[in-house]
Amino acid sequence: MTSAYQPSMFDLMSGPAEAVEPLTGRLTRHQLTAGAWVDVLPGWLHGSDAVFEALLGIDWRAERRRMYDDIVDVPRLLRWFGPREHLPHPALVAARSELNRHYAGELGEEFVTAGMCLYRDGRDSVAWHGDTIGRSATVDTMVAIVSFGSPRNLLLRPRAGGHETLRFPLGHGDLIVMGGSCQRTWEHAVPKTAKPVGPRVSVQFRPAGVA
Image (cartoon, rainbow, N blue to C red; front, side, top):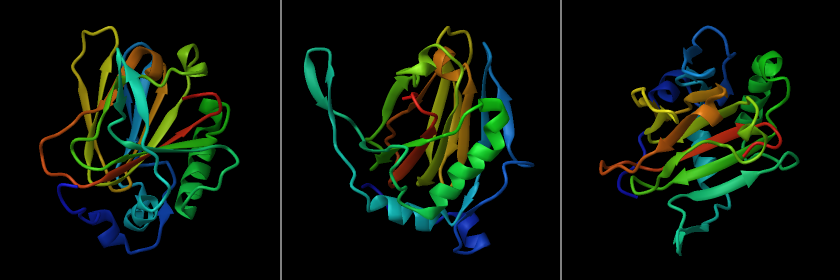
């Protein structure tokens, strides 16, 4: 790791208790093209430093994948929690419950799985992609991401081109929800960076059958 993690200012101001606020008021929706949108709420999960420390201790898994004619290391560590698995911190259970409460009418189903990525430093990344393995390849859905640790940029761009790339710096309990046609009509990425950054954990809540 290239630098130490710096505690969240939201946590220093609000105290150590882990809690999520209601998804009203500060939540901002950004309307994109082709029926896509993203909701953003900085500092949504208070006490994110304690959650972050707990997440660093889970059983992270290194994976290898085929790329063209070679097998390469995935440039981040991974962990997936299925619908019946216990999440590694009560604050994540509270976060999922509030997401389900707020988006029940719009989504029409619940967030049930939690995929997690550990970006150990600026060399870890995820390439441009949409979460289109499963139902999200053909229908509108949502993916809700809560970030912990050092901020990293989440970039979004339309698959059809003709629009500037959007940049969302995420960290310290920040929330972003990608909805509508976002997974099919837009792509997102976390690029590598040469800047000295500490570790970041991304927690992605998804409905069943979306990956």
